[in-house]
Length: 146
Image (cartoon, rainbow, N blue to C red; front, side, top):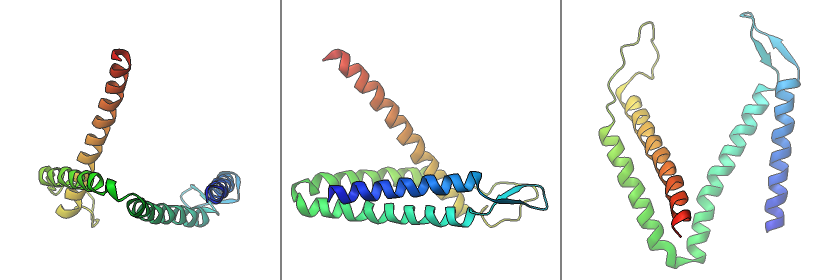
């Protein structure tokens, strides 16, 4: 199983390198505005979608397999999921979602529910960043104290 995972990993990396090289060094045409449009863009986007879908599927399957193989950790995992849901709810509560007064914009993204979700995501990112910094500082301090 590990050999298969390593093989799949190397295949995905090789495909990403080839598509990246084709994207940057492959054929391109100029748009009427003077921008360069690589001819491989659609293939690169399809590969990106494939890798994202694969990651989402594996992110769903492997925790389920882990819980089935180790049911003792189920309670701890549920506590983590409930904690994340509570933090997300708090972030959603504090998100404003006010419509922005943008000049010359007639798009459909300047609506309260989209802005509220964006604010929630930003707050969650701030919390994750602060948590990562605190974990780094804690691990460095703890290393010197022990």
